[in-house]
Image (cartoon, rainbow, N blue to C red):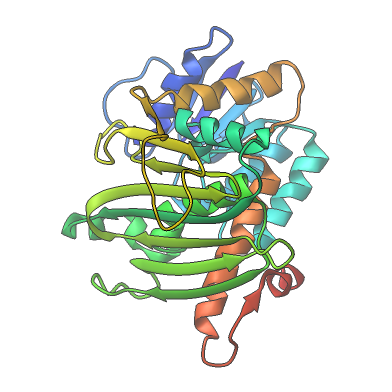
Length: 345
């Protein structure tokens, strides 16, 4: 398979390395306006050249958020399989337009919801699906980082290119994990603010609570870029036990070790001990390769993409819209439902 890359910065290079681990893949052509270093492939003069090149089978999109919608639809319509970074677009309506193009093209489309492919998350999902721990009762996710003044020099600090602040950047991953572990939500309460960096239209903190009205499952999110000590924490508590993931193995190492704690209900309240907890420590970040393998397998064997589908993308964008809408109408409405978001899109 000949791959074309639209965007060959940090993420594009990470993706190229992961896909190139397969003997089925060759990096054929790239487009990167700010290319650093040399590459052993063809260099395009525009994104459109990649999209229109009939020699290319698959396009990988790693660009500022604003372009994801346009380039994905263009690539699908040109008959290419597409792998695109998150977020899929700026709105749920745009994702529906992408899904229509996907259906018409018959090509594979996968989104880079990379956190689903971490070994600890795979372990958590398998334990939940086993039923041994009962049904999910509640989830809590905290995901934060710090930035400095150089952040303002990047495209992520520009509303027209980024679309949103920390929720689009990091929080989207935690929301996707909530959906992955516990299913969809239909009630949202949220507070969205720029407490420190004070960027117009770009939040640096989000506090959100989501509920499934049918099951009663509640999930709580704090997404922040004023977490001066980087943090990743995902907790899932079930009828018969719990799973707590602290840390995430990344190339930078800034989120610490990836350590998963699992236990059945330990004792009768109020006494509590931690003797029965089992710890799983994951020393290697295999997520990029797992993700690439999943996409390549779908293409090679003509199987549906199972993880990072366009439907996954639609569900998380509906949730993000609900969080933003809830904050904007807080004084008029106590709650914004996803039903309203879906009807509008």
